[in-house]
Amino acid sequence: MSEHIACIHCPLCGAFFERMTLGQPTTWNLAWNRERSSDWHEELRIVTSRKGTAPFITGVGFLLKVAQHTVLFAPPDAANWRDLDDRGVADGQFLILRPASYEAFAVLQLYDSAWAFPVHKACWNLLECRTSVSGYDGSTLALSLFNFLISLDIRPGQHIEPTSVYGVDTKCLDASLASPRMATKWKTVHANPCELSVLNNLPPIDDLIKKYESASYPGWRRGRSSTHGQHTTNGSWDALYHLPPELLHMVLLLLPSKDVCALRLASRAVANNTRPQELPQAFWRSKFLPESEMGFAYPEGDVHPSEINWFHRYLAVKKACNSRTKYYALKNRRRIWRILTEISETFEKCNTRQGDHIVLPNFGWIPLPRYQSRIRNT
Image 1 (tube, rainbow, N blue to C red):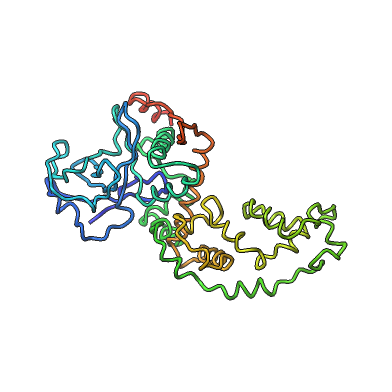
Image 2: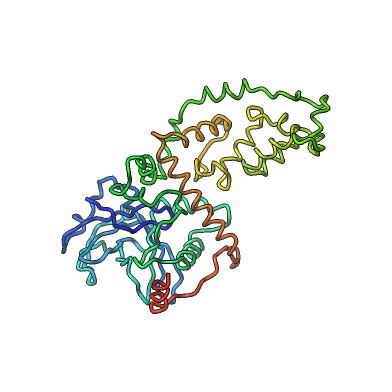
């Protein structure tokens, strides 16, 4: 049995953590059924640092409610709790039997010697994918994320509260607070963002393809014989008129989608030579790169380009994300991906290089008295 932890959210996605509710004392086998399929909310990691040591990310564990404490039991290295034996040892601090290869990390408390930020395993995996293009590895990413989180404002409840950065009304994070009109958003926020099977069952797009094929472009003809084609839509000279389509396609590869649309609206020559259905597959494939509009669709890049019509896939993913009744996992991954993109961009703006690694500068250790003062003034 699991429960939501009131007002405690993952700083990477805003969704609730979940913890097991147990009596005390208990045994390891009662604490977690290894055969039970776990929800993505329940599998967590902690980005933590003890004073004087470098921040690190724990292995995959889970939260338990033990007496008055919320404790994450996790292996200190990158292992997953399911891969370890369950030989129990007594934990003197929390009076619970835990696996010998695990450590107990108390969270949501202020300590002068250690800081701990729990994050969903799924969100950490997505953050790794999003920052991989920037040169991060596991160790430097943990350091940068820790420095980023410890620099954020913390509310009096001693946690990072969800704000507009999560892209949803905070009431959508709790089913008991969400109104009926928020039901779709609530389902989206709590859908597993790492569920990729939805990409094998995307909505049909025959209607969209016919729409593009039947679209007309009045006012100019294909090619360069039209004198109207030498001018932009506002009558000024079109500097792109004499560029061959192949070069225009190369230019569009470097632009985000919104800039492509703006350029097509501004230039008749560009619009005439870059009809969506006639753009090369390389253009549409580029939209699925991690830093691009559809980067969330294949976060791990596990695709076979020769097997996919990228224009059709672009239309299908976009249609799925506009659905009001389905594809919640895909929509949640898009929402989280946008948050992680902002975090990744912050890393890139603030980073320094240590050898071949990129890290966010250390914001300095915040001792308990100073931190409590910061909370009171927030």
